[in-house]
Length: 315
Image 1 (cartoon, rainbow, N blue to C red):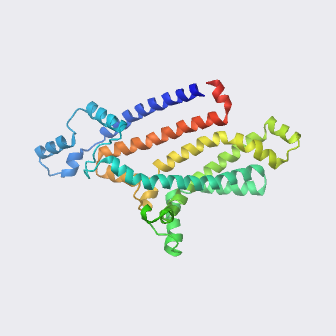
Image 2: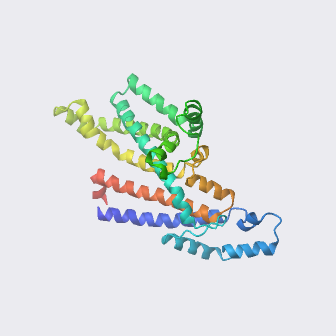
């Protein structure tokens, strides 16, 4: 297990190094200059040069990369060009919205998908299976931003159960904060629950056809007992990958949903930073999101080894 973990850890570090290089190079070659953007098109060249010097944009790119990457290792993400505020403080403020939103949506997705997938697999070819698969197909097909607007129309405008947007803040209590995140979380969770339910059904059907499941039935276990004692656990191996990827997507891919609901999360921060050419904010937030994706995949790999001992023996 230790050797397996070390190999995955080395892969994580190399992936982060490559990702940081790619992010820096891609953003740096984007057209437009932050100093020119901030001063406007009528700014004098000497004024632009002075601001570039103040922002540290006049140093070689390799030095800027090393300063940026080295600063991230100690938690220093630099200072925003636009707001003149430490990027780490901006990320910390927004993370307290995006992270709970992602966890809330993942919880909803899992609570809906697991029973649906198991129910469909246990009734393969019957009406219940067809109903669940039809619902999941619809969930995959519906864009989450359209579903979000429908949620606002029904539950915020017509029924007035929720606010149409904004975030109440955790200082008003956990319930108030979760209430503000309910509609966005459901909007994010819908397509993810549909995908996860289909994967759970497919994985469980493969397990139900294995010899050890027939042996369990031959020893006297009922279909339900064999399903829950042996089938579900073994079916979780591919499902863990989907859950890990879904969390990464929910954390990094909520830009549109945060725009629909006016949530002050990382998604809106990236959108605003791109609009104002605040490169240091874009680089830092994107790198943080990539770090979360790679770290979650690392944790999923370790979870694989815990669920399936064959992976430990292979390593």
